[in-house]
Length: 372
Figure: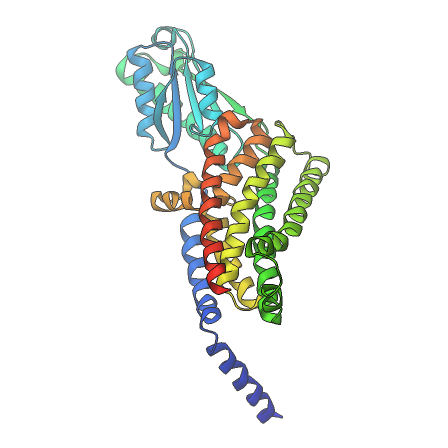
């Protein structure tokens, strides 16, 4: 009995060794998982992009802005002249927080009155919003003590200091479901369409039926389109299905246009199909295709902002994330569902997906023709 088991074990080892691509993925996957999780699995958010609306223009208001900048939690990148301009920056995701300093702030701070400021927070990512909320209060309290006791010689107990009035947009209750469900919609759309496309062609190769299709009058483009069209329909149906469950079961509010979401979902599918076709030109079997797609999906999940905020990652990984199409799809889905964003705000993400889809489809089609 032991001899027979060892014989089967030896046969399986030989089979694994003769498949170097699967073997490489087996050994590389845990290493990449550890590295990615080690750097991305954190909610310690710093250097949040911040916009400032300073309506006071006093030395005290400038010192407050400097205090927020010095805290390392906030990077003041924009100075705006109106609340509308500040709102557009937050809608577009260019700013995650906004400081509004009203006129009379400096006068109230040095007098006997409480000086109030408004702090606008993008609540679409709850962990980022919670960090911004806490840091805004902490920095204001510290700055209030410094300015009142040290600079002005006024007893902090005898006057109001700085009162931070937070405004959490898009997700006022900072519910994690409002962040995760739209992300899951994007992830399902990405993974299913990519995996099904790669498996469809790999199955034809594995079963030896791809040669039968080649000798038919079908052109290569007709063959590719015919193979992937059913999975496009399935992926769109799943998108609608998950969206309905998210709204009715989890109570996710949809602020934007569902038709726009479906239209942009089709554009996102093009990039997924390109990745799936490209993987199918590399894999010879369905098992190889599955390994390869899940190997690709690891950086997609960890570096796109699906699980952990991009703001918490090292700068190098943030730059690498620009090469991942799921990053742009997440911005689109969350932007439409949570913020009610339109094309005027999401056009950069749409353009990035179109460029990525064009590049992957052209490369995949070229490799596929050579393989045929």
